[in-house]
Length: 401
Image 1 (cartoon, rainbow, N blue to C red):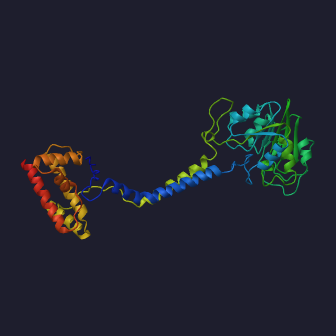
Image 2: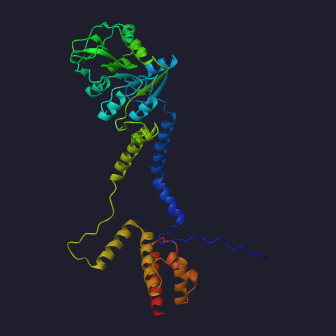
């Protein structure tokens, strides 16, 4: 007759716990933390996946907010213009060429070599809201720019024969462009104001360079004011290819293939949102965990306390808290450490190895030794006292062996 051996029972430590019960306790303590972090991660994932293909970059053709220029870009696309959105000077120069238009939106971080590189493009150049650096480079040093201090409140007539200005008619835009003395007669100024002209057109060989001092004619919130929409469509819709440059603040490129673009351009569009959520999670976790104390630090005591007094004080604390399991665990752990050292076993010895060694040294059954060192915790003080006596006897037998 074949008998099936009973399944081995889990090893019980001195405080009455097993590996499974300790794991369950840790899960109960950490489950709310895990659930909160999982919920935050799920929220970030849903936002990243469901986020519409738009941006918040000012003057970007995919920005539908008031400071964006999506309205102009979509109308141009409906008219057959291929709008290519770039964020580096190198990409803009690589995409723009003869028979195309290059639009440069306000770029306050533009470097001198970058301005010269943009001015040298063979495409028709439209510069909106440029500073003096780009105005000088794009116009060949025939224009200068003055800050507008008197924004117009009434519509202004173009006062020139530039086709885009004639089509736009009256506008309410700020101007600060002026021609230097003795300039080339191919420079035309439109919409004169008290601070300067709004638009300047420069004929440079086979291409046109147009500078508009006020870039608000591109924005979603003002594109319908007066002739702003007509001005934008005529300037940017001349060719079927339009390269739309909104420079990244970290861009330092000058020519195609001159080097890597900004670090941010290598990240997906949703990286910013995920990064902000991750930062929020870190801050919340830091605030939550800050209330916990760090590890105990040993400090010199002002007086010398006898070991017996410390032992009695700790015993009284265990007794007051009725923590018999912890008291028994301490007794068993100390006994196991001392007998293992006596028998020449390392501190890392597993319970089975220690039990077998003690059983051989004391001639006791292995199950009796295991019950003493790794049995269940006592249920009352009498059992705790009995356990202490039996552990002391067991340790004496090991020392006599």
